[in-house]
Length: 260
Figure 1 (cartoon, rainbow, N blue to C red):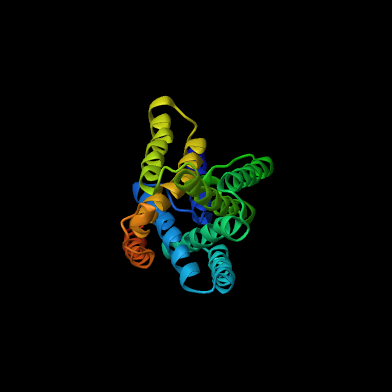
Figure 2: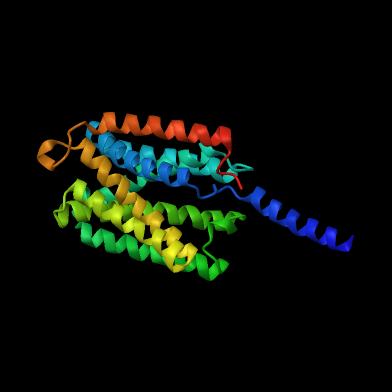
């Protein structure tokens, strides 16, 4: 009887922690949606700042991002629609933040890439020093959730700068950059499953690489032939990616495959 009560208490604690978590389980669909949001954020940002006044669009995107994050933080439980909308807005605004440093301030992509890498290392370092873990499975408190979203925002900015650096500064072009990051993202996957690479390190490595991976292929589809793209237009590409994201998020909301 005592043993049964002990097991019940342990399982109850696990269930309680899972109920508190507002981060989805990492599945194949998680990575698919993540890559789609990175591509959509890239082309949507480009479309907005080139179609409208960037001095109005960027602050407006910041406000929408703040609202999306507030809704996510105030939510009592995980919601696929709320979570992924916040990720989409992080993608859009993160792209704008990285582009502002280069386009408006003239800072080279190499410098901005290094800057965001340092910022990311500082955020992760502070997170670990404070919480003693970087596992997304431990995000059951408000402070850890804040660290999580600070990390997500920084990874998007870093990924944007890195993708632009390989495509423009290193002159690989968008398609070749996409292929490069597709190869790089296989490293944590193979390393974790075949070589015993630390799961937390593998996750964040892959999470960072998804940004330039999705953005590079989205840029390749959207930009002009003169820039090495397919010239489908950033607006149409953004709409198609948004539709795909809506389909997958709808599937997750109904199936709850991403709920522990």
